[in-house]
Length: 326
Ligand code: SF4
Ligand code: SF4
Image (cartoon, rainbow, N blue to C red; front, side):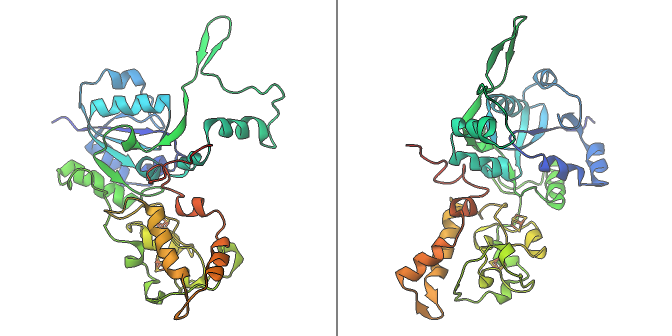
């Protein structure tokens, strides 16, 4: 019997999601044995024309990581959608926009200005920017359009399943592959991870009191972090209350607060807003007493980069989506 065809593709991403496939270790041999990989630009020399030559839905499943930032990425994911029975948004950037999604706090012009003019290591007296078309005398060179706004995968094509995480941990990847191979998949649109918040599975949960008050907000490098206590009790912003579990509390076990890469649990539209409301309810208290407006304001001012903190992985998927430019 023919093996199911599988494709991997990356859009705007750091490459970490490709690493996680390699991190399957010996399990990758089981995957390679069970499926026929027909496209994987980072590892195998297939070309776009190889995908174009496939029939409609001939690929059983495409795992696509990265946000959609360029014209080329948009074209490729549309092509893979046409050729695939299932599409899985693999990792935070495909799922929610991820770190590349923070680009939505800027425009293409401000990003280009910073990258090609202002950075201290750049020497560009003529102010040359990448062009979509350049005539080089013997022909024309082209580059894909760099869009103004970063999109999640499902803002570009219909997505069947989501594998969260930055990157998704190998056990979740293997569970998903096994579910696909055995046809034991949940309802379409599901996130393939537990529908619980980090605080529900956190080893420090017992140290998080019902009513919590913060006297001062700190950044991790500013204090000696107690490895047993809830980060919020220590005045560190931990996105555990607003983030889905399933990562094995990787950061928390390494004594770092959760930064939110797994995204929200089911039914929460805006992870950043959920966390803001959790923080707002904490900031209002000083012991049992209500804080004065002034004291709350002072605390809020201690949160460095609130937008980047609360929307680090989810800006394009949030209600804000992008900064409005004047
Ligand atoms: S806020 Fe963070 S450290 Fe505290 S219980 Fe929740 S996940 Fe754990
Ligand atoms: S603890 Fe939070 S930031 Fe770290 S891997 Fe898990 S979900 Fe992602």
